[in-house]
Length: 248
Image (cartoon, rainbow, N blue to C red):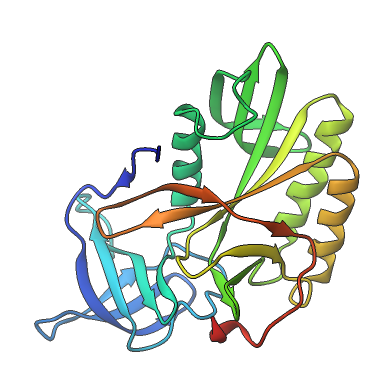
């Protein structure tokens, strides 16, 4: 059974991407010919997901004070639809844990979000119960390579490395710790670290695994109606690269 999707509050507007720039902005041509600037809720490289001419979908905020009321949510890539709104991964994974969709966590009925731990970090999810405590960090995966290989990160991520160090320290303090890769791309069928992009992140994850941190990778179901958590995917610390990032 699939979790209830994280439903968009209104119908999404379709358009064609003209360009993404300054990380947080994207110009989109609407079917009627108007060109608007939308907020881009993704700070990563977005390799393969920001090609000019791509079909995209936008939500519209009801907050009148926003400078850019539209938010870029979805993009159609050659390998299938992807969600570029990285923060939705947290909502999808949270909904899955609340619904009891993730095997092995039945003994943690208390679920909280954005809980402080470690050295100034916030866990995306903190689970508690008779089994103790489990901390969960969620990362969105959209970088798709040849053969359906999804890799993380898509850019050097000092913040991602910090989270791995914090999770390993949490294990040392007696907590269960999980790195959860939520795949927001239909074309991805397996997940690995992008050691060629950020070798330090790959080393940090290897050390975290040796220290008892668990890794889960699940692919989301994506449509213009909403997003839910689909099925688990195989994860590899290292996987042979098959072509460049645009070849998925």
